[in-house]
Image 1 (cartoon, rainbow, N blue to C red):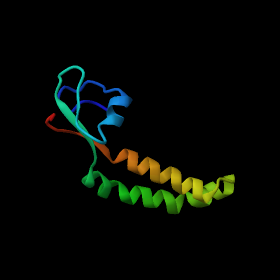
Image 2 (tube, helix red, strand yellow):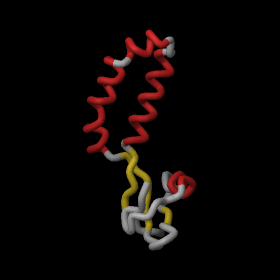
Image 3 (tube, rainbow, N blue to C red):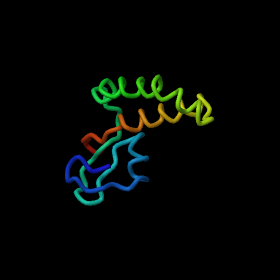
Image 4 (spheres, one colour):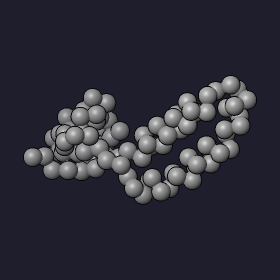
Length: 90
């Protein structure tokens, strides 16, 4: 993911820490925090639901557990809804 201020790529460890509190970008020293984008959630709910309904017969044919497939789609859905937003540092 990129910094919302300067568009530099951020390390995964600093993004993971930004779930709890605002973190500073290494380059521009501005604050950001990781949040769920509600608009992105609404846009992606139809493709996620369609993949659960349409692709499920295929994964049953391949022998993949339906629970594992549902968990995989859910994790990918939530990860795609994450976004970095600007926040002031305390």
